[in-house]
Amino acid sequence: MGRLDNKTAVITGGAGGIGKEAARLFSEEGADVLIVDLDEQALDDAVRDIGGNSVSYCVADVTESAANETMIQVAEERYGGVDILLANAGIEGEVKPIVDYDEAVFDRVMNVNVKGVWLGLKSTIPAMKRRGGGSIVITSSVAGLQGTPNIAAYGTSKHAVIGLMRAAARECAALNIRVNTVNPSPVETRMMRSLEGGMGPGNEEAIHEQVAANIPMGRYAEPIDIAKVMLFLASDDSGWITGAVHAADGGSTA
Image (cartoon, rainbow, N blue to C red; front, top):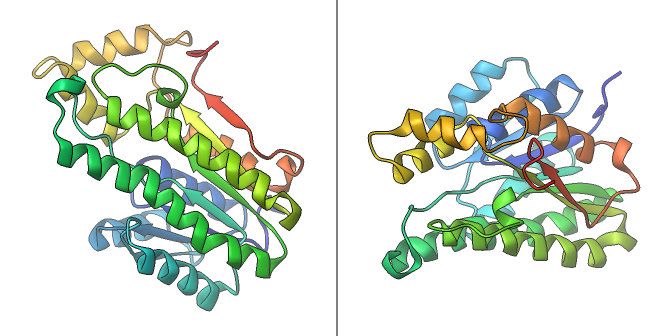
Protein backbone atom coordinates (compact mmCIF):
# COMPACT_ATOMS: atom_id res chain seq x y z
CA MET A 1 0.00 0.00 0.00
CA GLY A 2 1.43 3.36 -1.05
CA ARG A 3 1.54 6.49 1.07
CA LEU A 4 -0.34 8.43 -1.63
CA ASP A 5 -2.87 5.82 -2.75
CA ASN A 6 -6.05 7.34 -4.20
CA LYS A 7 -4.54 10.83 -4.27
CA THR A 8 -3.88 13.18 -7.17
CA ALA A 9 -0.85 15.47 -7.22
CA VAL A 10 -0.14 18.47 -9.42
CA ILE A 11 3.56 19.31 -9.67
CA THR A 12 4.71 22.55 -11.29
CA GLY A 13 8.25 22.66 -12.62
CA GLY A 14 7.76 18.93 -13.09
CA ALA A 15 9.80 18.31 -16.24
CA GLY A 16 13.19 18.01 -14.54
CA GLY A 17 15.27 18.16 -11.39
CA ILE A 18 13.43 18.01 -8.08
CA GLY A 19 10.00 18.17 -9.70
CA LYS A 20 10.60 15.18 -11.94
CA GLU A 21 12.04 13.15 -9.07
CA ALA A 22 9.05 14.03 -6.89
CA ALA A 23 6.71 12.96 -9.69
CA ARG A 24 8.49 9.61 -9.91
CA LEU A 25 8.36 9.08 -6.15
CA PHE A 26 4.74 10.20 -5.77
CA SER A 27 3.75 7.85 -8.59
CA GLU A 28 5.59 4.96 -6.95
CA GLU A 29 3.67 5.72 -3.76
CA GLY A 30 0.32 5.37 -5.51
CA ALA A 31 -0.59 8.89 -6.67
CA ASP A 32 -1.88 9.98 -10.03
CA VAL A 33 0.44 12.84 -11.03
CA LEU A 34 0.04 15.77 -13.40
CA ILE A 35 3.36 17.43 -14.14
CA VAL A 36 3.29 21.01 -15.38
CA ASP A 37 6.00 22.97 -17.19
CA LEU A 38 6.61 25.23 -20.20
CA ASP A 39 8.55 22.81 -22.41
CA GLU A 40 6.27 20.17 -23.93
CA GLN A 41 9.14 18.05 -25.20
CA ALA A 42 10.77 18.01 -21.76
CA LEU A 43 7.42 17.07 -20.21
CA ASP A 44 6.90 14.25 -22.70
CA ASP A 45 10.43 12.99 -22.06
CA ALA A 46 9.83 13.07 -18.29
CA VAL A 47 6.59 11.09 -18.57
CA ARG A 48 8.30 8.49 -20.77
CA ASP A 49 11.28 8.28 -18.40
CA ILE A 50 9.10 7.82 -15.31
CA GLY A 51 6.98 5.23 -17.10
CA GLY A 52 3.76 3.61 -16.00
CA ASN A 53 0.27 4.96 -16.52
CA SER A 54 -0.10 7.26 -13.52
CA VAL A 55 1.82 10.32 -14.77
CA SER A 56 0.65 12.75 -17.45
CA TYR A 57 1.48 16.33 -18.31
CA CYS A 58 0.01 19.76 -18.99
CA VAL A 59 1.87 22.64 -20.65
CA ALA A 60 1.27 25.81 -18.64
CA ASP A 61 2.95 29.07 -17.67
CA VAL A 62 2.58 29.48 -13.90
CA THR A 63 2.76 33.27 -14.23
CA GLU A 64 -0.61 33.33 -16.02
CA SER A 65 -3.86 33.09 -14.08
CA ALA A 66 -5.72 31.27 -16.84
CA ALA A 67 -2.94 28.69 -17.15
CA ASN A 68 -3.16 27.88 -13.44
CA GLU A 69 -6.92 27.47 -13.70
CA THR A 70 -6.43 25.20 -16.71
CA MET A 71 -3.93 22.90 -14.98
CA ILE A 72 -6.32 22.36 -12.08
CA GLN A 73 -9.22 21.79 -14.46
CA VAL A 74 -7.14 19.22 -16.36
CA ALA A 75 -6.28 17.39 -13.12
CA GLU A 76 -9.92 17.31 -12.07
CA GLU A 77 -11.09 16.07 -15.48
CA ARG A 78 -8.42 13.37 -15.75
CA TYR A 79 -8.25 12.20 -12.15
CA GLY A 80 -11.35 13.45 -10.37
CA GLY A 81 -9.81 16.07 -8.11
CA VAL A 82 -6.65 17.55 -6.61
CA ASP A 83 -5.25 16.42 -3.25
CA ILE A 84 -1.66 17.67 -3.49
CA LEU A 85 -0.03 20.70 -5.04
CA LEU A 86 3.75 20.80 -5.22
CA ALA A 87 4.43 24.43 -6.18
CA ASN A 88 7.93 23.81 -7.43
CA ALA A 89 8.37 25.95 -10.57
CA GLY A 90 11.20 28.43 -10.15
CA ILE A 91 14.05 30.20 -11.89
CA GLU A 92 17.37 31.43 -10.56
CA GLY A 93 17.85 34.74 -12.37
CA GLU A 94 21.37 36.06 -12.74
CA VAL A 95 24.38 36.30 -10.45
CA LYS A 96 25.15 40.00 -10.00
CA PRO A 97 25.28 42.58 -7.20
CA ILE A 98 22.07 44.51 -6.55
CA VAL A 99 23.40 47.67 -8.23
CA ASP A 100 24.13 45.76 -11.47
CA TYR A 101 21.05 43.53 -11.48
CA ASP A 102 18.83 43.85 -14.54
CA GLU A 103 15.32 45.08 -13.69
CA ALA A 104 13.65 42.85 -16.26
CA VAL A 105 15.38 39.78 -14.84
CA PHE A 106 14.34 40.79 -11.31
CA ASP A 107 10.73 41.10 -12.46
CA ARG A 108 10.84 37.72 -14.21
CA VAL A 109 12.19 35.98 -11.09
CA MET A 110 9.43 37.53 -8.97
CA ASN A 111 6.77 36.62 -11.52
CA VAL A 112 7.73 32.96 -11.67
CA ASN A 113 8.87 32.34 -8.11
CA VAL A 114 6.32 34.42 -6.18
CA LYS A 115 3.37 35.32 -8.39
CA GLY A 116 3.41 31.80 -9.83
CA VAL A 117 3.04 30.32 -6.34
CA TRP A 118 0.32 32.83 -5.43
CA LEU A 119 -1.66 31.99 -8.57
CA GLY A 120 -1.20 28.29 -7.85
CA LEU A 121 -2.67 28.77 -4.40
CA LYS A 122 -5.60 30.76 -5.78
CA SER A 123 -6.44 28.03 -8.28
CA THR A 124 -5.80 25.02 -6.06
CA ILE A 125 -7.45 25.99 -2.77
CA PRO A 126 -11.02 25.92 -4.20
CA ALA A 127 -10.34 22.52 -5.79
CA MET A 128 -9.02 21.14 -2.51
CA LYS A 129 -12.02 22.59 -0.69
CA ARG A 130 -14.24 20.61 -3.06
CA ARG A 131 -12.15 17.54 -2.22
CA GLY A 132 -12.46 18.03 1.54
CA GLY A 133 -8.83 18.99 2.14
CA GLY A 134 -5.33 18.54 0.82
CA SER A 135 -1.65 19.33 1.15
CA ILE A 136 0.24 22.17 -0.53
CA VAL A 137 4.03 21.97 -0.56
CA ILE A 138 5.99 25.01 -1.76
CA THR A 139 9.62 24.78 -2.84
CA SER A 140 11.51 27.57 -1.10
CA SER A 141 15.26 27.41 -0.40
CA VAL A 142 17.89 27.98 2.25
CA ALA A 143 18.20 31.26 0.34
CA GLY A 144 14.87 32.10 1.94
CA LEU A 145 16.38 31.69 5.40
CA GLN A 146 19.51 33.82 5.14
CA GLY A 147 21.18 36.59 3.17
CA THR A 148 21.99 35.85 -0.46
CA PRO A 149 24.66 38.16 -1.89
CA ASN A 150 24.66 38.44 -5.68
CA ILE A 151 21.40 36.51 -6.08
CA ALA A 152 19.15 39.02 -4.35
CA ALA A 153 16.13 38.43 -6.60
CA TYR A 154 16.20 34.68 -6.06
CA GLY A 155 16.76 34.98 -2.31
CA THR A 156 14.04 37.60 -1.96
CA SER A 157 11.58 35.42 -3.86
CA LYS A 158 12.29 32.48 -1.58
CA HIS A 159 11.75 34.62 1.52
CA ALA A 160 8.47 35.81 -0.01
CA VAL A 161 6.99 32.36 -0.55
CA ILE A 162 7.54 31.58 3.13
CA GLY A 163 5.27 34.53 3.86
CA LEU A 164 2.71 33.24 1.37
CA MET A 165 2.89 29.79 2.94
CA ARG A 166 2.27 31.11 6.43
CA ALA A 167 -0.67 33.25 5.34
CA ALA A 168 -2.20 30.37 3.39
CA ALA A 169 -1.68 27.93 6.25
CA ARG A 170 -3.66 30.17 8.60
CA GLU A 171 -6.38 30.81 6.03
CA CYS A 172 -6.74 27.16 5.03
CA ALA A 173 -6.40 25.26 8.31
CA ALA A 174 -10.16 25.18 8.89
CA LEU A 175 -10.57 23.75 5.36
CA ASN A 176 -8.32 20.79 6.21
CA ILE A 177 -5.73 22.11 3.76
CA ARG A 178 -2.14 22.07 5.00
CA VAL A 179 0.56 24.36 3.57
CA ASN A 180 4.31 24.02 4.16
CA THR A 181 7.63 24.87 2.54
CA VAL A 182 10.67 22.75 1.81
CA ASN A 183 13.91 24.72 1.87
CA PRO A 184 16.73 22.85 0.13
CA SER A 185 20.40 23.68 0.17
CA PRO A 186 22.18 23.29 -3.21
CA VAL A 187 20.92 20.31 -5.22
CA GLU A 188 22.53 18.53 -8.17
CA THR A 189 20.32 20.14 -10.82
CA ARG A 190 20.51 22.39 -13.87
CA MET A 191 19.77 25.42 -11.68
CA MET A 192 22.92 24.92 -9.62
CA ARG A 193 25.01 24.43 -12.77
CA SER A 194 23.71 27.81 -13.92
CA LEU A 195 24.47 29.50 -10.61
CA GLU A 196 27.95 27.97 -10.48
CA GLY A 197 28.60 29.37 -13.94
CA GLY A 198 27.49 32.79 -12.78
CA MET A 199 29.63 32.67 -9.64
CA GLY A 200 32.80 31.62 -11.42
CA PRO A 201 32.66 31.53 -15.22
CA GLY A 202 35.06 28.87 -16.42
CA ASN A 203 35.65 27.64 -12.86
CA GLU A 204 32.37 25.83 -12.28
CA GLU A 205 33.98 22.66 -10.89
CA ALA A 206 35.97 24.60 -8.31
CA ILE A 207 32.88 26.57 -7.31
CA HIS A 208 30.96 23.31 -6.93
CA GLU A 209 33.63 21.90 -4.63
CA GLN A 210 33.76 25.12 -2.61
CA VAL A 211 30.00 25.25 -2.11
CA ALA A 212 29.83 21.57 -1.20
CA ALA A 213 32.63 22.01 1.35
CA ASN A 214 30.56 24.66 3.13
CA ILE A 215 27.66 22.25 3.65
CA PRO A 216 28.18 20.39 6.95
CA MET A 217 27.30 17.04 5.38
CA GLY A 218 29.91 17.72 2.71
CA ARG A 219 27.90 17.36 -0.49
CA TYR A 220 25.08 18.72 -2.59
CA ALA A 221 21.68 17.10 -2.13
CA GLU A 222 20.42 14.76 -4.81
CA PRO A 223 16.89 15.44 -6.11
CA ILE A 224 15.63 12.31 -4.35
CA ASP A 225 16.79 13.70 -0.99
CA ILE A 226 14.41 16.63 -1.41
CA ALA A 227 11.63 14.59 -3.01
CA LYS A 228 11.47 12.36 0.07
CA VAL A 229 10.81 15.38 2.30
CA MET A 230 8.13 16.52 -0.12
CA LEU A 231 6.56 13.06 -0.03
CA PHE A 232 6.34 13.22 3.77
CA LEU A 233 4.62 16.61 3.64
CA ALA A 234 2.28 15.52 0.85
CA SER A 235 1.24 12.38 2.71
CA ASP A 236 -1.05 11.87 5.68
CA ASP A 237 2.06 11.10 7.77
CA SER A 238 2.38 14.87 8.23
CA GLY A 239 -1.30 15.38 8.97
CA TRP A 240 -0.69 17.64 11.99
CA ILE A 241 1.93 19.83 10.29
CA THR A 242 1.01 23.11 8.62
CA GLY A 243 2.56 26.56 8.39
CA ALA A 244 6.06 25.16 8.84
CA VAL A 245 9.44 25.66 7.18
CA HIS A 246 11.36 22.44 6.56
CA ALA A 247 15.09 22.92 5.94
CA ALA A 248 16.46 20.05 3.87
CA ASP A 249 19.97 21.40 3.81
CA GLY A 250 22.57 18.98 5.15
CA GLY A 251 22.96 21.12 8.26
CA SER A 252 23.59 24.41 6.43
CA THR A 253 21.27 26.45 8.64
CA ALA A 254 21.99 24.61 11.90
